[in-house]
Length: 162
Ligand code: DLZ
Image (cartoon, rainbow, N blue to C red; front, side, top):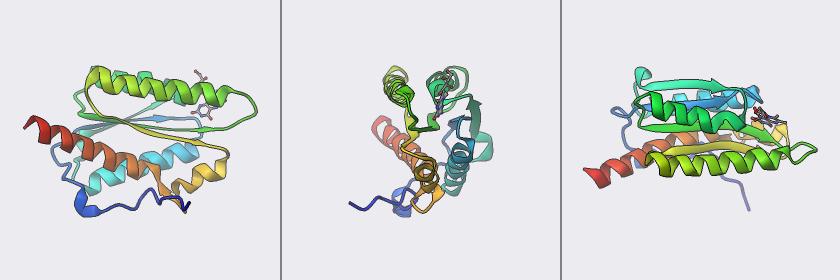
């Protein structure tokens, strides 16, 4: 099966983000990858009308800290949606499994606890090349996809609560 290019989407399907406020939390581990994810997310939000002053970007040490970093953004700022960006690369131990499970479950719980979109932008790959391929490389940028998902989820909420 061909792998989807993460930066390809129907432009017309994305609503304006001009009135939306976003938090972005980025893990510093594998920063060559996660920095590129963050750049992709910011560029995509701006492309769809988000204002610079309505984007708060914060870093945490590693992916395991993403859940709490995202919770801090939800608790202590006025953002409408939070984009969570990290990269966990498979090593020789089971560390990978524990981090991935922890973050996945953590993000799921945050969505429910705050009734806000917390977008899963975690790359979980076998090696560095697979991660780079998805961080602005030949398969696009997971940060772009996460930003579009955040906008669409907020638009859905607006639609249902208007
Ligand atoms: C310790 C660790 C390892 C081995 N690998 C990664 C990784 O591939 N990606 C990532 O984001 N973080 C990694 N970390 C750091 C943990 O996420 C966490 O920051 C530390 O265990 C401290 O809690």
